[in-house]
Length: 283
Ligand SMILES: CC(C)(COP(=O)(O)OP(=O)(O)OC[C@H]1O[C@@H](n2cnc3c(N)ncnc32)[C@H](O)[C@@H]1OP(=O)(O)O)[C@@H](O)C(=O)NCCC(=O)NCCS
Image (cartoon, rainbow, N blue to C red; front, side, top):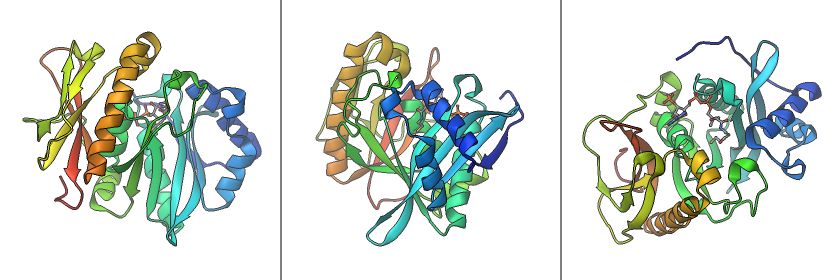
């Protein structure tokens, strides 16, 4: 991994929070009306949430922000955005920001962080479920309604809800050291999806909704950004297929506990969501 000198700190000055707004434009390509303004970042930071920046050479290159929430009398943080400038990706900045977010939450006495992510984005799923040790049990259909953000490419904004139990063994392990990126050994369950084509342009051809094994595997597409831009019909097929699969299996008592990357002899790795029955052993 290339090394760059990055400083991390809580942001609270309006000038710095405005830099977070600029970053939203550059990372997500949001339309003006979808940008979260500095004033909202400020009130989130002052009311139990946190805005944490990654700074390189006096310039903001990434940030994560969360606001407080409460459900059934229990406080939690809802993490609203995590973004790193394209030129600074793959350097461990995103992971570090999340680990610092965990620390900030624990310092406030909060032991749970939640956030939503697009199930088509397997790198995000890998970060959330594999690298950080979150679990997804809830699927939202068209969560944000139609978005004009270029990163969303006009698809319905379906989302999985990541639930991060900050004191759980997986989160504690994630905070100590990075998990290996690739899965070694045979696939750990029954694959319920049928796919075709090279991994970089994988098509979803079909799926089973009646599997009942202990661990089920759901394949996810690679190169989702390119697919959304260049092949919207394939992206829509994945969106609708994964929607039906997740609604069905999460409704039947499974949860998404991991996204594993299985290396191939040639070309990109295949990626599989690992679904296990709620309450069953850790993996
Ligand atoms: C998601 C994002 C914040 C990651 O930032 P980053 O600084 O590149 O992330 P890191 O280098 O710390 O990598 C963190 C993890 O992401 C995952 N990841 C990153 N690139 C990946 C890839 N090409 N394939 C699979 N997983 C990948 C891995 O789990 C990785 O951990 P590892 O390196 O220990 O395996 C960044 O890509 C981004 O800004 N994307 C656009 C905005 C967005 O989608 N935000 C939502 C995040 S849920």
